[in-house]
Each structure stands twice: as structure tokens, then as C-alpha cells.
Length: 87
Image (cartoon, rainbow, N blue to C red; front, top):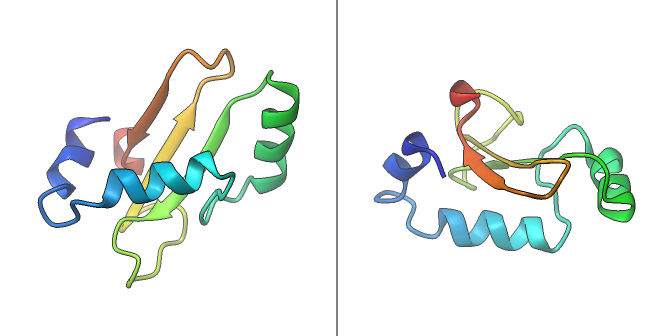
């Protein structure tokens, strides 16, 4: 996880567990790429991208404020939790 995500953990201590749990279940949150993610999981040859609200009581557009991204590289070597502005 990036330093920016770590800053949110004090106010949202369940953030990583909640979002990573959804990600592992194939719930891509508010991502604009759900079909591509499903295909990436089946084929294993593309990156996986998901977006979740940091505070689930507030809306998230999948980018910008109140958004956490999870990105797994196509080779599955790493999954990163980051804020959109850290991309």
C-alpha cells in the first residue's frame, strides 16, 4: 500500500480488510472495468483494477475524492492499494 492509503487507516481502520476482501470475492466496487476484470481473472493475462469508496457512507465515482484503487499487475507479481492521485 502507498503512503497515501496509510494516512486513511487511522480514520478507517477496516479500509484494507474491507476492500481487499471484496476484491478477493470478485466484487470490483465502483470500477468501470468489471467485465475486463472478470476476463482477466479467467485468462490470467491482464491487469485487474478495482475502485472502492474509502468511506462507504459517502459516494465514490471510482476516481477522485473518497476512492481507493486496487491494481494487480498482469503478471500477478504485485497488487497495490493506492489513491487515484498517487497513480
